[in-house]
Length: 426
Image 1 (tube, rainbow, N blue to C red):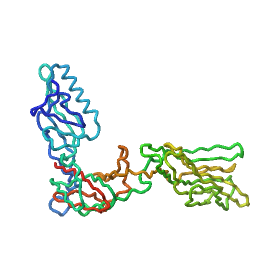
Image 2 (spheres, helix red, strand yellow):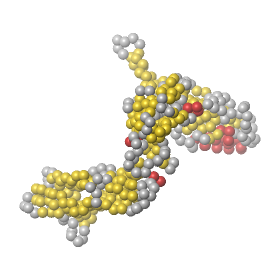
Image 3 (tube, helix red, strand yellow):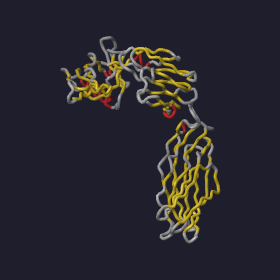
Image 4 (tube, rainbow, N blue to C red):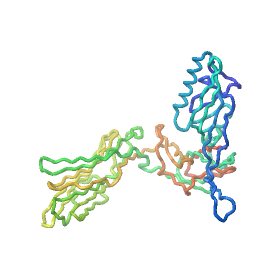
């Protein structure tokens, strides 16, 4: 039969799949029940009637489309039905759903079944239903258009329901919608996270030269190169670790001190704690290390912890905190400890996560604030990068656009504001 056009032959589009490409046409508007509000009725002793606990939401609904297909041969009919069914089933999660009966609206839907075909004589035609589970809203396509707003403008919500818009903000400052304030901070140095730290690994081996043990904790950062330009500044934190060691059996440690021999980065703090059982725990915390993207670099701090036992014997524990950047996409942070023969490492751990940041910001780009999910992000080279640390909300509830008139104001440090209102109805 092929693709047929004209007002009598209508189709639906689900996640980019056009039913008419498969010779499938909907023969009527979608059938669906009105969405049900999520309300719990609670009976209270001594009170007439029931208390209605409205959770402020609608439940999902089932949407069913009557459809049909007619092909020249039974083989063509069977193949097209199979291809169409598989195309729908291959899409996972919510997808955009539109139909030609309601071109000004769309839904968010999941394909859940249907296509049990009743074939006509000759098996080259048939009728069936296509079933979707949908979010309760029917979104208006008019609400998808970004509206540029100047401070003090009014935005009219043509529906009876509060919408959760998407904001696109250039600049920084305060944005006020009704009685709610959104604060957007200026993008600071280190505002864009490059990558989380990798798995911790520990190595332990004896050195043949002096029969001491050397133990290391290390973490690697695999940087997404798409988020860096050569010359960007990369900051690594934190360059600090905590180690615990135990002396030989029967040895009581009475004191221990730090000696720092080399320090490429500033030290925040050092400490030594001698616990019951002579476990010696020491901590070294340095400031963030800074490197230049595209240029390899190496920074370290080294020193000695001198421990003294109750018989005035001294023991030297050498340590080194190191960070190395290979000039490409890998940063490795390590903490090495060399302990005397007879000593043993106890529990050891990193004092904090190691995180890579860059001074690069998407200059000239907007901060996107999604008021439906309460998240903020940039677009960098086509990929979203979180900007949640730059955006705060005055109240627990996210700002909404109420039915009727909404006044939007903002500081003059916000150079441009666009609003995608996301109007909807049931």
